[in-house]
Length: 68
Image (cartoon, rainbow, N blue to C red; front, side, top):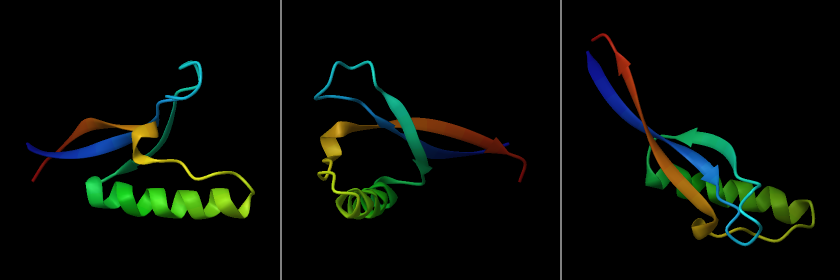
């Protein structure tokens, strides 16, 4: 079996109570996370919300296995 590591992007509610954690998406690596965050913040700005920083998210490793 072949393993590949992806990352779950979790909003960590760092500046709230910590009770509003939620999974946002799955990305391949840190570069994809940065690209996702840029797009995420563009949408937030269009909606009149403020941008979020990297520290407001956790990247949780997820190993996916497949047959070669």
